[in-house]
Length: 159
Image 1: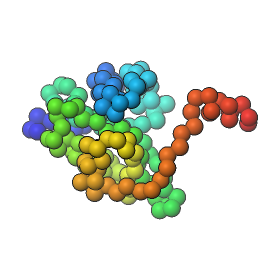
Image 2: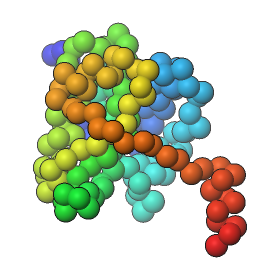
Image 3: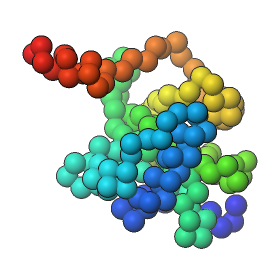
Image 4: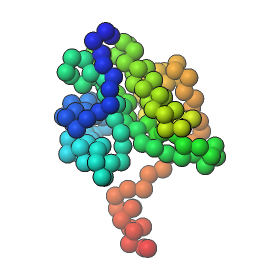
């Protein structure tokens, strides 16, 4: 892992990250994401920024990435981070890259005066579940909901 660099993402990483996001969807058995390099640049930087990125690079190639955003936990009365995505290219797994990305995220959390990080994981992604549990992540009994597409538009129409 000597040639792996962990750094903050930049707009020039768009193509590499979107290719890895496609691999993540395939790994999870999901449809290809609608996430494009333009979306990465638009929402990952500048006045419309909605998330931040950390990348793992081997040479000049992006081999892993992590997205996160700021959040707040009312029960704890403190800020923290919500990890949105973490993915390492298959041939670069088992080299400590995922852990290095999580360490970078943990450091960023403390820099932002946060004391917690949350994330979601597909229940069928056994590799990820083992990785998170080995790192000390704990599962909690929450049920995820999503309001999107037609259901979201229907609710907007009722306002």
